Image (cartoon, rainbow, N blue to C red; front, side):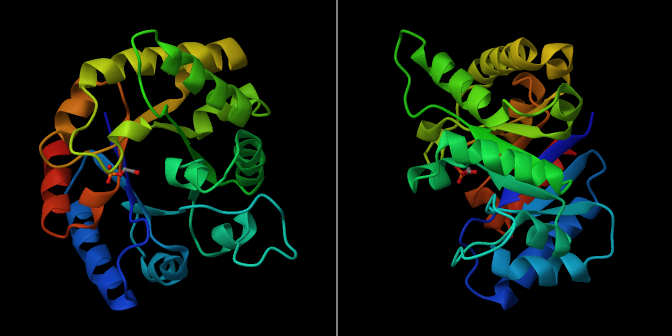
Length: 248
Ligand code: PGA
């Protein structure tokens, strides 16, 4: 089965020139990797130039965030329509770093709806801050799913990607174990079936948080996920191609 890899560049690299080199390295890795499809999420200021210059089929592009309003007085924001017009096909919504800057569950709901209205794939991120023995993290994730996806009609559930990213594993030294991910993937599917009926089984689930070339393959083969959302390792021109190779 094909794995989906979302390369979340975050606020990197610092110049268009470096963005082009990183893009080139990613493109080469993508083109020799049969079973992997890569979605690059560059800073939005690089998005259009990279996406319009690329003529191949192996790569897709995503924005890291966009506003839910159609247009108007929202200084510093970009709209879903603008994302679509820049030739991106997806948008990350509810990333832990955006939530930490104040994005609410209610906003994620509006953004998911706005993205789907533009025929963009929402890459909808959920994940708890911490875990304790009592399993509260399951309820936390369930509430994020409910809040963000409540308006999505069952027929659209298979169009989105749910990225489970436990906040404690993002930018950390270690990823979550594939076994724990497996358990969470079952829980997420069960929650989606509860909300959207059988179509919930079709949602694609990604894992994110401290994935690199040493643990990517294991997470995909044992974690019951259809792909990965990768931060740091996706901006490393040496390591990212190796990571992709381990998946292909
Ligand atoms: P990381 O980030 O791979 O650097 O841990 C993942 C993410 O935040 O998407």
